[in-house]
Image (cartoon, rainbow, N blue to C red; front, top):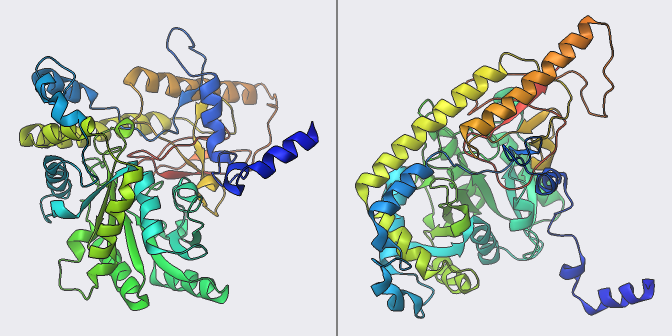
Length: 459
C-alpha cells in the first residue's frame, strides 16, 4: 500500500503533491472548525461564529432593493431574457465595453472623484486572487521577490507564490509606530534580499491595510513612490478596500491620485489591483481587476485573463448596477455609516470586559498567520454577520469573562489550554480601524474584512 502511494506521487507533478497552497497553515484552522460546526441561531446555536471571513454583509438590503427595481439587469428574468443570447454567446477577453466603463467610473467614484481611470486599461481577472497572480507572472521570474510590509494578508503566500514560484520578502513594521511603513524599513528589506542574492522586482502595498485597517497618509504614499523609482522596481497597489472605510476614518488616498501630483514617477512601474469583493460585498462574483499604467503589462495581463474571466452574465449585471449613479452614491454613503455603527457597538461592548485565553467558538485569525512578528495580535471581522449573530458573539465573550471573575472571587484556578499569554486584555485605540477581542479561539482563513485590523492582547 505504501509503495502504491509512492508510485501515485511519482505520477503527479510536484505542485499536485506539495503543500505550496498553504492550506495547512494556522490561518485555515478556524475555517475548518467553522465548516464542521457552523453557527445557526436555531439549528446550531452553540456552533462556531465566523469572525475570520472578510465579507461586508451590511448593505445587502440595498442591493436587493435595486434588483427588485431593475429586473432587466439580469438575463435570467422575464424582463432581461431578450438579452440572453447576446450575453451568452462568446465574448473575447477584453470584456464587455459597458462593464469596463462602469468599473472605471466606479473606481473613480470610490476615490472621491479626484482621479479618473481609463476603461481601456481595465483588465478582468477571477477576483483579486487571480489579479495578484497575474501581476506576479507579468512582473517577475521564479525566484524573484516582492517586498511586502508586515503584517500582511496570509493569502498572499498562496496568491503570489504557489504557482509563480515568486518569493515574498518581509518589510518588518512595528506596533510602536502603528506599523508605519518607513524608508528605513524598506531599505533594510531591500538590502537583506540583495545580500541573499535575491532579485527584488517590486513592492506590494495594501491600502487600506489588510489586516491592520490603517489608511496610508499622503507623505507615506509619496515616500513609497520615491523608493520604487529610486530602486527601479514595480509598485503593486492592492486597493480592494478603497471604499470599505467608516465615516470616522481619514479619507482614503489612492496611489493613482498621488502620481498625478508634482512628483517624479515612472508610471510604467505603477499597477493597481482592485475587486468588488469588499467594497460591494460580492466575493462570490469573482470580479477582480488589474489596472496598469504600463502598456506592455496591460497587453500581457489581458491575454492571461483568458484563464480567469468574469462571466458575461456577471459583467452585464454589474455594468447595469454601477452605471446607476444615484444607487452607487447611496450605497457608498450607507456602507460607511453602517460600518461605523457596527464598529461603535462592537468595541463599546468589548471595552466593558477583560479578555483572557479562552475558547468560546469564535473564529478569529492569529497575527502570526499574517507574518506579524509581535505576539499577542489577532484579526477579527465583524461586518460579515447580522446584528443578532454579533450579539451572540458578544454574549459568549461576556459570559466567559463573568465566569472567570466568579472563579477568581472563589479562589478557584481555571484550567488553561496552552497559549502564549495567560492573561490578555483588550486594548482599544481609535487610531486603528477597529479594536476588539480575542484570544486562543479557532483561527481563520479567507481575507480580512473592512474594519478588521489586528489588535493587541496585552497583559
